[in-house]
Length: 250
Image 1 (cartoon, rainbow, N blue to C red):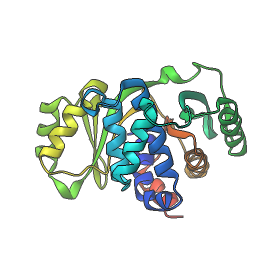
Image 2 (cartoon, rainbow, N blue to C red; image 1 turned 135 degrees about the horizontal axis):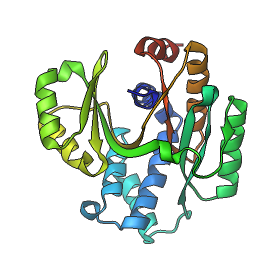
Image 3 (tube, helix red, strand yellow; image 1 turned 45 degrees about the vertical axis):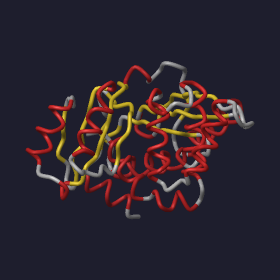
């Protein structure tokens, strides 16, 4: 599987540090607010907000914070006016990048994203230059020590998954975008705990990177992740598990 999924797993491992810096909570509040503004405050009728709230709970956000974010989105409380945007470009080695943001100032955000790309060997592209390389999917990562391969494969395929890839320490499950919730519920009903569970953009093809370019690519993705307005970073690179683990440990 692509560097995107491995990056998602690495992000989970460093999540505690991000949470201390407050970035995870800030990003989660923005996502809940926008989801509530677009789809309303009823969690049962708003899949995007339901996913956002689950992500917020996963980083131990208090219920009061979640409730305030919902009310700001529905207009019951005053707050900043956030909107979604996406930017496209390229990273080291010609890797395609798709960056989604939630911002109250597009001019500020696009300037900061462009600067980050430039500082880390990348560049901003025109709208539409790489978006076509990615497909909307659901993605779950489950540690191998929770379940055996055949049992999990039967479970997720019956629930609507389209593929499962076995990695060194975990299973990667890919679902159609529309089937993500059903597969996630089936996994949770089996008392399994995914390290990553998200609706995402999966690249249709990947660019193989050597160690040096992979290191540069990960530094770029981390810098983008650390920008307050950035919600997701998608990229179509691929490297070995061993290289990813070595770089993540540096």
